[in-house]
Image 1 (tube, helix red, strand yellow):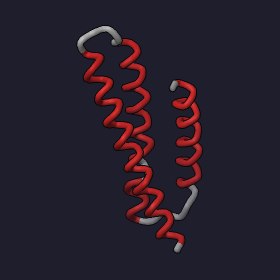
Image 2: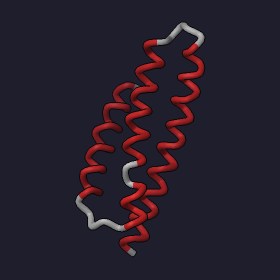
Image 3: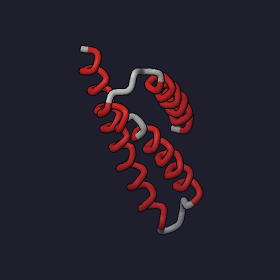
Length: 88
């Protein structure tokens, strides 16, 4: 799980740099930062889950970690859709 997190961080940051080089489009420029913010939150929630394991707070952090993962997937799907339509 941790190695996949490292790989995703590397890929997301590479993607963020690549998208930053594209010519700005209003809709894409507004939403392109959202996946990176959600990724940083996902990392923070994952670390918090490890630190608070065995406490009552753990279950809430784990649920937020899962929810944020879904939001991250949805935001990337939306950004990739906007990028695909931009090139069409």
